[in-house]
Each structure stands twice: as structure tokens, then as C-alpha cells.
Image (cartoon, rainbow, N blue to C red):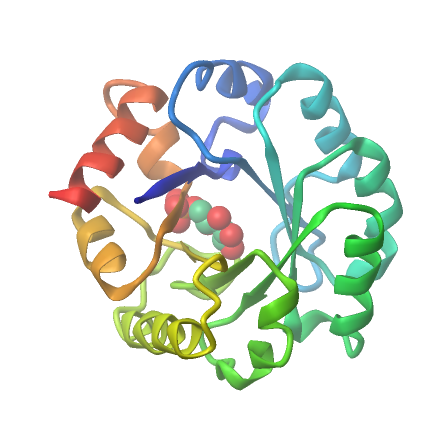
Length: 218
Ligand SMILES: O=C(CO)[C@H](O)[C@H](O)COP(=O)(O)O
């Protein structure tokens, strides 16, 4: 089973509401929202105020990918906004276990994200407490796909199988395209986070989602 998480970062920043509406009825697991602060990554996307507005706009489940320094500071506002899954980079805090615990206490699903250069050992201790590992397949803030991250996905899938944690999802993020979907799925990613492949798809975003699903399962 493959699930698609459209990354709103790939949409026209002046039309985020319309881009969100364009996914109505599409088989989307979460709408993926990249919060970037200009510190953890160079770019600044949008903040929790926009996330809250999108929460009011759509019934789609929301997955917030915090690409910020001090992610702890954002948790209260995200919980209040009513998001469904919060993914935090292990590189962004010295207290990742505390962040996961706080999300659990609030009834929000927790995910961990790891940069390409971060070893899997950084997430291993917490695998039993989270619902998703986001494996960055590009450096964060970019879309330059790094082919060698496929092997990391393979090793993570084997690790989850070994620990009998088959409920933990592996999401690939960064440079995910129709042409790469099958290789990512075969490596063990069961969730594909895609920005431009969805929102810049020639046939529109719903077509972009359909194409990614079809390509992964081909
Ligand atoms: O987290 C991200 C980058 O840090 C985005 O999700 C990523 O850029 C998605 O865009 P695309 O699919 O076009 O590469």
C-alpha cells in the first residue's frame, strides 16, 4: 500500500488555499506542511498561523514537518491548531524524546525526520513511540534527490521488520517524482511526500497524486 502526502510547499505561495481545495476528494493520506524558519533551513515558508488557517480551510489530515530551530517552541500552537501528525528533525533538538512525549500526551501523532547525512541510529531508540520516519531524500530545503538514500530506506525497512514495528511508516521526502516513485516504494517507503510532482503536475494536483500512486505500484 502506498500513500501520497502532497507538500504544499510545491504550490504557488500566493494561492495556498486554492491549492489545498484542489485536493478535495483525492486519495491523500495527509496534506504535508513544511514549516521553515530561515535557520534550520535557509528558506522561510510559512508558520503556525498559516497552518491554523489551513486547518480551518480543509478536512484533510495535516502533517506538519518542522524544519525549524527549537521545534519545542512550536508545539503548543500546533496542538492548538489541531494538526494530526507533527514530524520533528532529530538534528534540531537535544531533547527529541521530550518532544515525542509531549506530542503523545496531547494525542498528536509524532514523526521523526532525518537528514541524508544522519545515521539511522539517531531514530532507533524511539521507533516504538512514533508513527512515521521521514527519510530526507534530498537535503532539507532543496529538491535535489540523492540516490544513495534509497539504501537508507532499505535498511530502515529491515530494522522495522526486525523489531516487528510494521505499523511505523517510512516517508520519503525531497525530489520525489513519478520516475522515482517505484524505486522508493520498492526500497520500503510506503509514504511519498511530493511537492512539485503534485502541485506542478500538468493535469492538476489530483492527477499528480494519481500518477505517483500508479508509478509506485507499476
Ligand atoms: O521538505 C521539503 C524540503 O525540505 C519538501 O517537502 C520538499 O521540498 C518537497 O518538494 P519536492 O517534492 O518538489 O522536492
